[in-house]
Length: 134
Image (cartoon, rainbow, N blue to C red; front, side, top):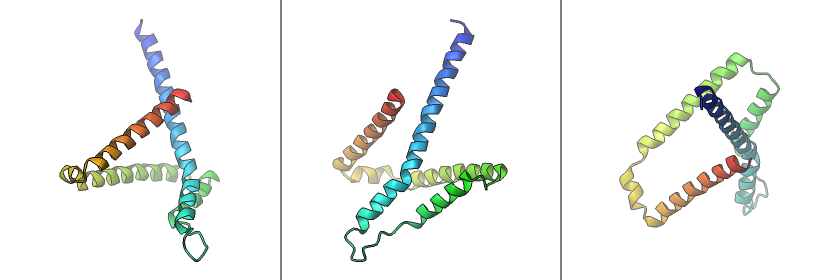
């Protein structure tokens, strides 16, 4: 096999992986509003007020999606905000990692560790199923 064929196959695989990742991300974002509203409904169901409290971040999220979808954000600003968003995510993950102490994780007991393991397997299996079947 020549290097050109190898490169073509690798490029096709990367494109498929990128398409699957994009689809997964879009589905996750699309499900944010209904899932959070459902959780809000079930949490506030036992309260006597009879109203569902909608989290403020959800309203902001919907407003920003609408503003961006209508093309009201200039491309330069959208790119800058996207870069800022990535750096904020990196900073949040780093902060979470810095606060995590492995010694404390071991003290939570085997049931919690098994739950973490099962959740990790479930997420990996679900991701593989989406990539495999879509």
